[in-house]
Image (cartoon, rainbow, N blue to C red; front, side, top):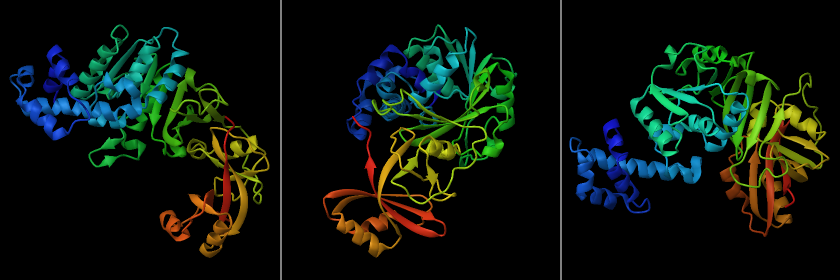
Length: 413
């Protein structure tokens, strides 16, 4: 999709054609109909009709795919394929924007490498005056269209530019999401981000308050000493590491944050669940299995806060190298799943199958950490055919593989 074809969609006639496409219809028949529709050719007489048809169908498809990140709002927005894939989910953008807006005090913000504008829009909706910067002309056109579509032009704008030419301190508030994809796919080395890691952190340090977004698997050893690091998950899936600088770095130096897009799941702890690092806590104790097994959220594990999680329930690790912990207490939380342990046994297919048969197991959920067992093959080999639901946890204790038979403890309604 090119800029002139995208621009044609923003005209009144383009909007009419775009609104008339049913996303549930067969794409081949829709494409054929659009090619024969004189309104399409009239959108931009100098462009091939095929370019205009592609631009229309691309937006229809991306808006449907965008529901997963933006809900119903995606039907008002515009996207590029890469921009949608790399964009921040709305629940995360809203969370970060709330935190940033709390210290804004009327100061403007810059959103560098702004992509399709998810973070820029979230900041503007909270009253922050914000300017986006991106190097791609089509992306800039898409962001500008999103600003207009959501009625935010009075406090949001975007320009084409190279963020490496932005001077540190140019924006009192700053958000930067360096590109983590190159010509060969995803980039894992922060030094190969665009802009490079040292440039991005320099920009963040130059502002009074800043947030730098990084991959969730960023090595702990490259995290800046002057930044507070926060690992964020959504519905159990780890999404990113947010590094907070300046005024936004006050508070815990390490934090795991659990968000949910499904309503009601965080009822016991409010809209967001946090777990903060405790200075000087030390490693969690190690002990044999107790009554309950805790399976911490991915954000807790990746932030190296399993000891803090275990301490909340007087828990202990089963093995110092594995992120399961055990306790005599059951304390449901969005930060972990709680399972009641009924049996602990060294792993053996024969013994496991016999134990499941004795419990009339039919629905078997298999979870594992520190185990090399092929769970799909194990499912087939277990041949469970009963009526009860059982969770099997595969792990390692010391040098031996173990199976734990469990039932999940669910939060009271």
